[in-house]
Length: 209
Image (cartoon, rainbow, N blue to C red; front, side):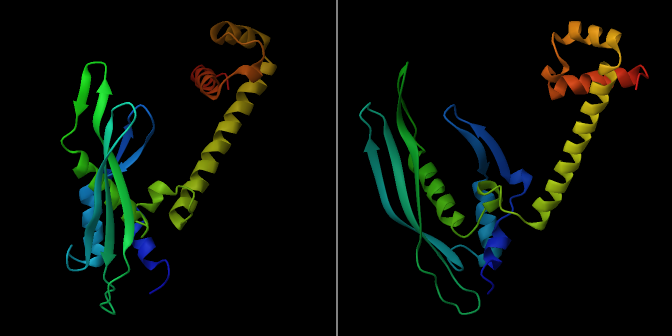
């Protein structure tokens, strides 16, 4: 088996399996847990036959402010399809809030251990590369290279638009005075990309450029 063979099979996450979140403390992208199970089954076989998860620890930890969180530790095992040998344990740990102190009292979650377990599996499968494109956005593949080319091309178009607008305003005092009143800028260097785009579209609409 090539060293990155499994990693490459597991790294990509389809858009329908991604969900953006923002819990007030931080934001990011969640991966659908059922998609994760489907992908592991696709690559290693049925759970319990080609891979399985063993819970090695469950505990509740109480903070000084009275809040409690549930933590679960797991070992993930995968079977090598060719040799039939089981891997060494792949460790993962997850946590989730159980009791939160709010303005209205204490809020309790009855799914704390379940969510901590899901989080632990996520962290264990991450070691195999599952969802790597979410966690490691700078890792390059032929697909990310294509996106980079497209992004660079788009950036070039923005720069060209900026040049067109700046050149026009530099040579048209009446237009410069008009847009200064509209966008409240002193020099054209203060214009944002969004404002430049709006001016460009306005000038184009009235066949000024």
